Amino acid sequence: MSWFDCSVFGVSLFGACVFSASLAWANPSENMKVKKIIYTEEMLQSSVPEGLSRIRSSISTVSFSSGERYFPVLLVSTADYKSIDSAFVFRMFNEEGFRENGYYGSVRDYFIASSAGQFKPTFDIYPITLSNNFSSYQSDASFILPALDLLVERNDFKSRADKYESTIPFMILHPLFKDDAEKSCDDFFNHVFSLRYSANKIYSKNGYRFNDYAFVAQKAKGKSSSTNSKDVDMLGSYVHEFSHVIGLYDLYSADENGYATLGPLPYDVMSLGCYNGDGNYPPVFSAFERESMGWLKPTEIENNDSIYELKNISGMQAYAVSNPNHPNEFYLIEYRPAVGFDSKIEKSYYSGQQGKNGVFIWYFDYDEYAFASNNPNKNAAHQRAEVRAVLNKNQEYFSNFSFVNKSGKAGIEGVFNFVFDGNDRVCFTVNRSKILDKCPDIASSSSEALSSSSETLPSSSSISSSSVVFSSSSSLGSVGVLGHRLVPGMQMHVAHGMLNVEVPMPGKKTLRFYDAIGNMLGMHSFAESSASVDISGVNRPAYVRLDLNGQLLLAKRVKSLP
View 1: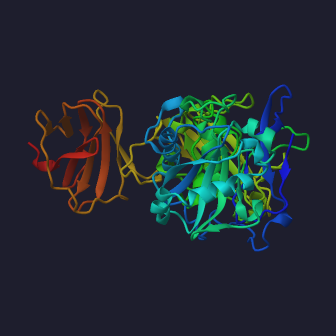
View 2: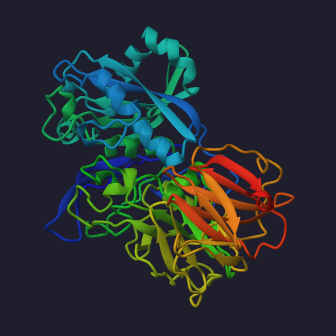
View 3: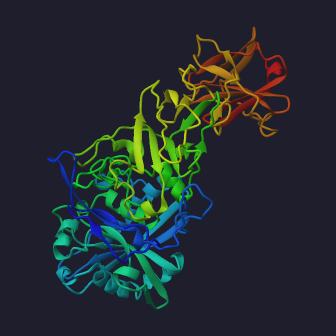
C-alpha cells in the first residue's frame, strides 16, 4: 500500500487523489490499486475555522461551482505518445446525452444532474503537443508548465479567456494509462494539486494566472499507445477529480493494516463509486455534497404526527436528524432509486463491497480539519461519513439515530413505515405505531410533510383505487381557477353526489378542487380514461380544475356542470 503524505499543502486546495497505488480490501484475495494524498493538521492553514464551513452554514461556496462556468482542459501529446482525438474528447466532456464507450452521459451531464441544473460547466478542449518524450518529464510541474506556456499563446484560448476565472482552475490530461505513467514518475497518478506547491509558484504569463489543477490520464488500461476513441479512461476518473477541483474531499480510506475501511464505498463518487458500472456510472452527488456546494438545504425532521414525503434526490430534497448539542453531527436521509447515474450502484467494477439502491441513511460527524485532511474516514472505528443503512422495501425502518458528541439525543425515535411510490418518491412516518400503507395523494408538489389531520374521502373503487386528500393548507389564489380549455371527447358531470369524468387521452389526469376564494380543498389523480369521485361531502360552493400531464384542460364551478 502506498499512502502519500504531502508536506507542503494548504487548505486552499480541495483535495488530491485517486486510484493508483495498492490498497487491499478486507478480503485479502481482492486487491485494488489506490493512491491518495493525505494532509496532516499541521499542513493546513491555521485560519481554518472549527466546525462547519460551507456545510450547513451561511458561508459562501466556491465561486465557480454554480451557474454557467467554463474550464480549460489541456489534451496533451508528447513526442512518443499521441492523444485521443480532441473532437471526440470535447463531446465526451460536453455533449448532452453522450452514450459512447459505455458512458451514461458526459462529464457536463453528470454535474448538471448532481446540481439539478444549478451548475453547468463547459469544458474547452485544447490539444497541446510537448516536444519531448513522456519519460523526460519527471514531475507533474515539469509536465504542466510547458503545456501552459503553449496554451497561453493560442488564439483560441485568448478569445475565450474572459470566460474563465481570474485564477484559472484547469484539467490536464496526459496521453497514457495512469499506471504506465507512474512507471516514468511517481507523481503521475490521477490527482488534484496546486502549482503554488508543486511548482512553488502560481503560474502567471501574458496576464493569465493558473493554480489549482486536476492531473488525469487520458487512456484505459493497456491502451497507452492507442489513439482510438474507444480507449479513453472511464467517466468516473474525470468526474471524481473535477469534483475535487470544485471543493470535495475523498471519503475512502484504509485501516492501519492497509485494508479498506467501510466508508461509503460504492455509494459515493468521492469514495469508490466512480467504479460503478465499469467506471461509467458514477453515482450522483449525495445530499451532503450538494449541501457542501450550496445547492441543497436539508429539512430537519420534527417530532410530530406528519406523514413525510421524500422525493428522489433529483428533486433536491433530503431530511436531517441532527445532534441538538452538536449540530456538526447529523444524519441525512435521501432517496436514491436505480435510475440514471445511480443505476449501477449494485454493479461496481471493483471486486469489493457491492451496494444497493433505496433510501440512504447517512451519518456525518463533520470536522473541518478532518475533511480538509482529505482523509475523514481514517479511523475504522469511527467513520465520519458513512451510509449506516439502505432501506428498499415497504415497511422497513431505521431507529438508531445515535450520536457520540456531547451526549446528544435525537428528537425522534426513528423513521418508520417506509412506502415506495415508484422512482419518484417515498413516504414515511416518525411514529412507529402510525399505519401507512401507501403514499397519500398530495395537494401540492412542494409539500414535504402531509398533515395527518387531513380529511380523506374515498372515490369509486370500481373506477380508481386512489383517494381524494382534503387539506386547508394549500391555496391557488386567483390564477387559473376560471379558465378553460376543452378537449374533444372529454365529458364531466355530477350525478348522485359523484363527479364523473371521462378523458379519452393517455397520460396522468389530475382533478383539483377549490372553494370560491381559491383555497384548495382536495386533489385526485388517475391514469385511466375515466374516474368517479365522491364529492357528496363538499357542502360549499366549489370549483374543479382538470389537468392532463400538468396542462390545464378545464376549470368550472361544480354546481354549474351539465
